[in-house]
Image: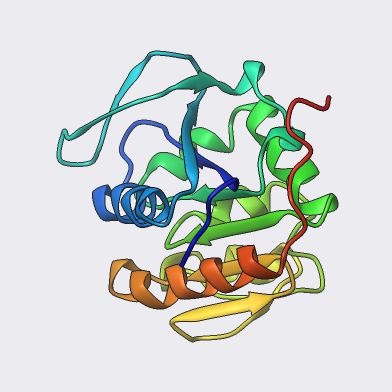
Length: 182
């Protein structure tokens, strides 16, 4: 799989689930994709649930959806912090509205609950936020991965292989990002 020339934003905040950031980051990089860790602040180190550090490359204030082909939203408790940030919500909303790939795993879809991205779409998530996802307008499906157009969701770390295969397929089918356009 060659993703050379493709650009991914992986959102990071404190209390993230380790595998749900690092597995996508390394798989995407391995495929030649340029990956940027995006957090509320640039250069900030965000500890995972177990204390494993992830240092943001860029601040959400310094990036544009036009700079990326896809965004990955990890789970853990990070989504609860991510969804409190208006710039993160605008970024994710715009990515979804532009038809860019929006991929969320585990508790990650809770960020989407604070946008209009789930309304009328098929999605899955960790069972504990199933009601939230449904109340945000999604048609919940209990499956390891659900792809509805540009929206890709998965339930838990065990689903990461299927999640990444769906992302790779979506990236192959997508139009390239307009690098540097704002």
